[in-house]
Image (cartoon, rainbow, N blue to C red; front, side, top):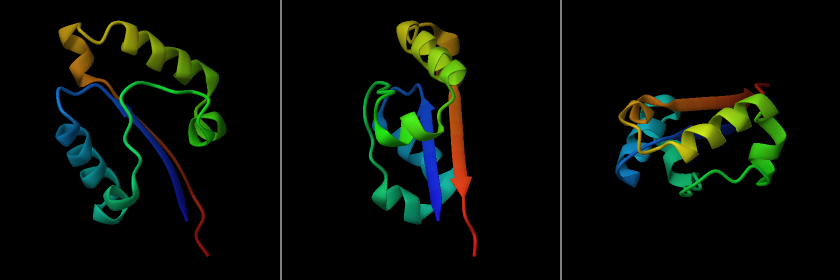
Length: 82
């Protein structure tokens, strides 16, 4: 089982899909919930995104027009293997 959170700045949702595909594989892309913007109260964000990282994501979101923001990406995951 995997619980995963991804945030990044992109010009188009296809860029995010490609990032997810390369990081987590095709199976995850098929079930991923993509949203524009950061919503810290969503269950997955509330469960695995530390407050300091959430603050950083919000700061990047406020300054997403800065060209350096396009290099921003964060992946947080928890895995349980049996």
